[in-house]
Amino acid sequence: MGNLSKVKEKTRFMPGKRSTNFRKGDRAEGFGIQAFRSFAAVAPVPREEDIGIDVICTLLRPEGALQYAEDSFFVQIKAASVSDITYEDNDYTWLCDLLLPIFIARVNLNNQFAFLSAWVD
Image (cartoon, rainbow, N blue to C red):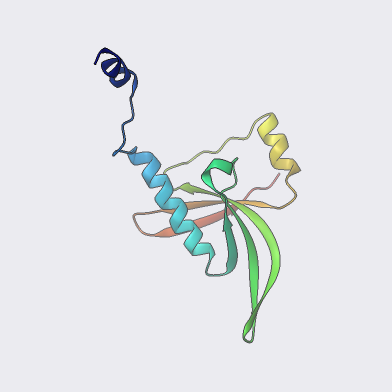
């Protein structure tokens, strides 16, 4: 029993609960992904592979009964409450060296609105 009580003291996050902020972020990301699917093919990046890019999108051009793949781009999705994203030093170099353009999507869950902005050097 002595070891079990020590484990309980060290464990801060127990099964059955989750941070409200993490949950809001997950919901914002899910809403953003669905919004992009209305005009693009969307490949979500799995959480364990997420290094700052949440989805890879390819624009779809409808033509008759077909949709043709056009340009591709990266998207980072944030909740609207996140007002600042800073890229410095190696982060900035990484951003500049990306082979596809990256867009920042801000999702407001209260009014179910997504806003997309481009990063420009």
